[in-house]
Image 1 (cartoon, rainbow, N blue to C red):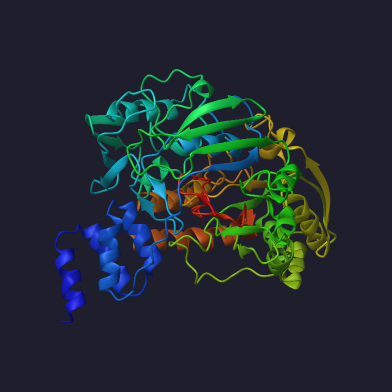
Image 2: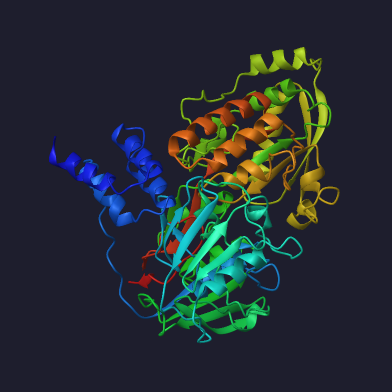
Length: 552
């Protein structure tokens, strides 16, 4: 037996069956390096250990990134926060970009979507069926106010976020997953999450992937803007609503000290002033910019754009309880009318991945890439329309929001649909009007028979599978009710090994292609513009982390 496999065999003796299944997938070639690291990290295996297995399997290592120089002020231009900043309730990028500098999560996603316990959790592990996840917490950590970080803070944080009687924005993640009272203290530095149902990728729900899940003190009572309390590498210096904020290095930080002395955030009501500020050298970095303005910065000589593969997408929903969309043949026909290559190469300028009418983006390891890609087929679409009794077409209004590439997508869809006789009128609204109160009966998003909605990046597809598509999903704009689908999602969510996840994912992809309640045409890249003298910004889709940034 070759020495590398002796090394792997020795390591496997200490692994549980579910962990060894991931090693089997790696050695069989069904998992590449990236997917193996990602899946192993979810199960709580350390990245150095996983890296040693990858090296032993002959798949090589990645070079460490060079460290930048300390000092200076990094200036960031971000969207104006949507209201009072509170990590429990916020939902907008302008708010969480600030909080990411001062508060921390139990774990954090890497550019390859692996999870790294570099923050407040040192390790985690599931029980046999994934219904209980135990996290070991880092010792010697203090909040900015001097309080020690302990298990009580973790329990209080997730009880707030999972409280059905509160205003937590994270209920979309925790409903049916984690209830108030489910987070239990084992000792001062150990917590156990007792889930409502087994879940094979639960650690992502308490990571930066769930931007509300920053750890706050148990004593937190609100008024976050006064303190920006947290355990993070920066402390609040000043905050002025509608104007900006400044932060300074936390010299008492438990980990490696931040490189910048200071951060300065400037708020902008629209993306165009942000881009002008970057071009003029008034700021050094922006939060992600929409595809429709990307060409402006791509052509600027002093600016570079970081392209981050993302699972963000636009869902084109068709209400399955409203004619003509009660007939799945009509839904299939509209999906077949779309030329996805024109969306990816034209609308997105090649900076996107093609969608196949399910939430399973190419970036997800469980995605079954053998499922045939849906492509434009006008002849077949017309046949389906005839079979549904709509050979002469139909009239319908598509309601959507004025954001990024969505109006352009709506216009292209209008033209595609015209080829099969569907006469689509467009109703493009401001975001506030479109989303309304985000509940059924009080939201154009959830009530319109035909619409397009923006969905932000997630490192696992769980929220995409549940909230907009299960029968009782709070974001089920398609009003899609399919018990078979609900059962498949349950099977996927509880699966701990990658093989079971792939089997369930394949079933889901095939069912959604047949039913087509929602069209997933493309997954656009995330585009983050920075000045060319900026280095050290991690290319992750979750948001800006500025503690390792330097100015050259």
